[in-house]
Image (cartoon, rainbow, N blue to C red; front, side, top):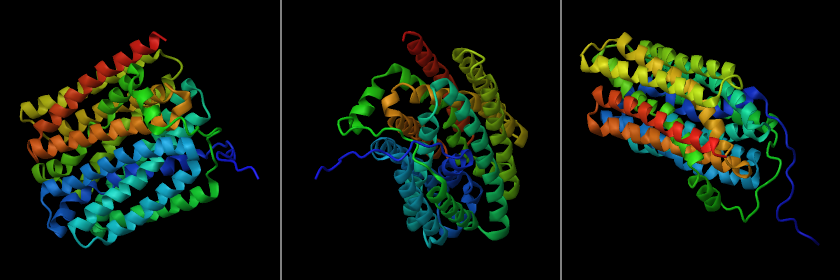
Length: 400
């Protein structure tokens, strides 16, 4: 009897767009919805400011490591089964965070939660690219980014009200419910989008080695990270800046995040409108110029000691407009470098993003906790570095 070691996949199919949104939302929602609750959680569990911010940093580490694994594994075994395992981990860990009796349990559960949630981040992007050309994928990823921007935009506002009226644990309960509902929907509706499995010879390390030797991939990945996840440094410090320094209530802080994520939505909408109509280098130059302007205005406001809600939220929202424009083009460019390893490229891209975001949060936590100037310096430096990295990627692509 002949044994098939690599049986054909059932499919490929096309996943419903809103299901892609939901699965991708799990990973980011797990970070954004609890941010307004950090001061209350720190007080309830006896944690310092740095320890509370550590739950964000460790969450980003879990997202980064998980994405390195999910991409190649899904190239080998298919998107659907790997996604279901990840969402199961996310849901179970969300229940654990909602019931955490102390800081140690909370931190451990957050790591597992992030590891599970990152499955949706990797495989949602890979599912889009599975059935589209690079040019078409940029437009679709822009729409996914636009829709996804609305989810974390609303999440801190919801988290702020939940914290104010139901306590800091309510946000974690919401994550458990959302994770369970998304898992059930994927069981019922998620098809297999991968048309052909990778072979055993195309190992994880070979795929990553090929990508890491590509200036084109590295330029897009580093540029995308600098344009987007540098914002996590701001997110880590912002509850303490807005609540402790500017004396804003938790529910109002949540509404400010809505404005910030509105910047991502506006940028993503603009990216979708110009995809295929403007040259990619021109779009990326415009996007980075907007990001640099926003970061510079924020740094000037801090240097001039004129910090208000307007001088914090306005410039950072402008930075996020640039991120919303640049992100889908950087992502589409990076996952198109090696069509045989789309899942690996998506995972490595996410790893670089989350690692950079984690480094930004560590810098904020250790440089001067609670201060504004480290955050402003990180955003401005990241915007300038992102401009240079994306220029390298564009030059490499032109040489092909």
